[in-house]
Length: 264
Image (cartoon, rainbow, N blue to C red; front, side, top):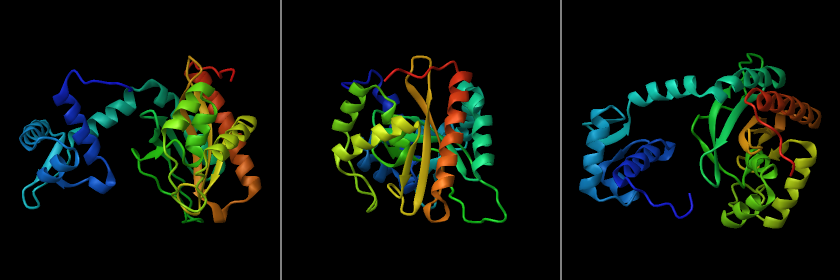
């Protein structure tokens, strides 16, 4: 993505608008708000929104004068989930992790040089335990927060990992967040030894995560499989159990998609 220059500016602007409306904090916005917040010429923005509205990629509320994502994206999302082969192969193992750990289980993939995004989930359906973490597909996380990012970076080639760590910022989400670069990098060594990453309240207070890497054909981390829950309701033994189950699932998914673990 470095030094990228768009050859089709209108298409890139349309993508930016759709991504902007896909965030929970900006899911409904007026033309003026979209134009201002994305720094798009207002008339250009209006023309692109008209096209997106015509093809039902955005909807428009006459009363509030606000735009939001359109129904055609539901169809595309469902088709993408159906057609993406690696996701289809990974889903049974995601469900298996959910059943084994009795925790919300998720798959994430990198969406840029510094973020991961939820692409699939299996939420625990436990009548005897109503306190389960619920996640939103499409939600993104910085690579320097929580078990997901630590897992991804720990198994990324060291030179690439160092470049990413130097470039991204370390935001303090909670009092448990790691904001010191040296401490963060040292924590990655422990992740490599265990084969999975653990975090306690580093991104969201009182929420823990355990994550393991899934490798592609070239030995790069293509996805992360993880389970999450409330830290106050889990023991160290269960954390270790989750880690081992995630390792097992990640190895099977890696094999299923023709991947291989790299020599780091």
